[in-house]
Length: 379
Image (tube, rainbow, N blue to C red; front, side, top):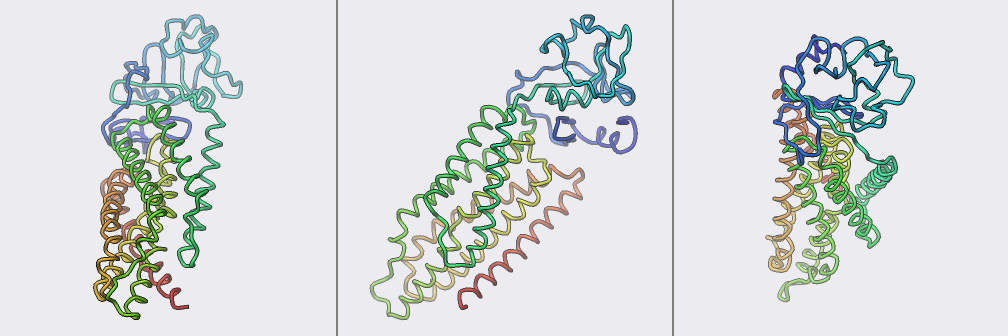
C-alpha cells in the first residue's frame, strides 16, 4: 500500500488514528480511548514515506517490499517479537516476503494480521498492538446466533400482520441466554479491543436497552390479563371498541419480537469488529428506526382512540409505561445515528446526509408497515 499519496494519505491526515486488524482498516476521527491501556503494547513510531510508520528495529507495513531477516536471533531485543516463540510471528510460507541476508529489522505484513491475529493502532507518533486470541469456535457460535436472530426477525415482522403470538417461553429463553453470553463475553474479552469512547458508550446503552426490553416482556407476559379490564360503566359498544384498541395495541407492543433481535445483531457486529464502524450499522439502525416510528404511530393512534371512549383509566395504565419506553426508543435511535452511523462516514457532510436518509427511510417504512397492518385488521 502506498501510504504517502492518494486516498490513504488523505485519511492519515484527516483522522485521529488508524486501526488495522484482520477484518479491515479503519480510520477514526474520534479521540483514541482504550478500555484498559495496560493490555496494549506501545512503541514510538514516526510517520514515513516508506511505511505506515517506522522504528529503528521495525517497519510497520512497508510501502514496497517486505524484507525477512535470515536470523531472528539478531532481533532478540525487538519488543514486538519478544512475546512469540523463536521470535517468529508469522509461520506461513506463502507470504511473498523476501529474505534479506544480515537484516536486523523486522517488517510487519498482512501475515501478521491473518496468521498471528494482531491488532494495530497508529496514533500520532505511537503504535499500539495486541494479539487477538478469539477462538474460531466462538466466532462460529456468534454466526449461529446471528443466523437465528435474522430468522426470528424476519418471522416476527411477518407475524406483525397476523394474529399470532411471538412471546413464547423458548424464544425469550433464547434471547436472555444469548444476551448474557454476548454481554459477558464482550465485557471480559472483547471490550479491551474497543478504541473509541462512543463505541463503549453505545455498547452499554444497547445492553441496557435489551435488558429493559426483556424484563418488560417477561413482566407483561405475567400481567397481561389485568390490562384487558374495561371500565364498569361503559356500554357494550364502548367495551368492544376498547378491547379492540387493546388487542390491536398488543401485537404492536410485542416490542421484544423486533427490537431485541435488531439490537443484539448490532452488539454482535460490534463484538466481531470491535467497533460500530461496520457496514451493518446503517442498515440495522434504519430497521431499528422503522420499528421505533411504527411504535410511535401505533401509540399515537391508541392514545387518540382511547380518549374517545370511556376506558381511559384502564388502557392508559398500559399506555403510560409504553410511552416512557417510546421515549427511550427515540433516545436509543438518536444515539445510534449520532454515535454509530456517524463513525462509518469520513466527512460531516456524508454523515449528516446518511443520518437524514436513515431517518426518512425509517419514517417512510413505518408508515407503509402501519398502513398495511391497519388494513389487515379489517380483512
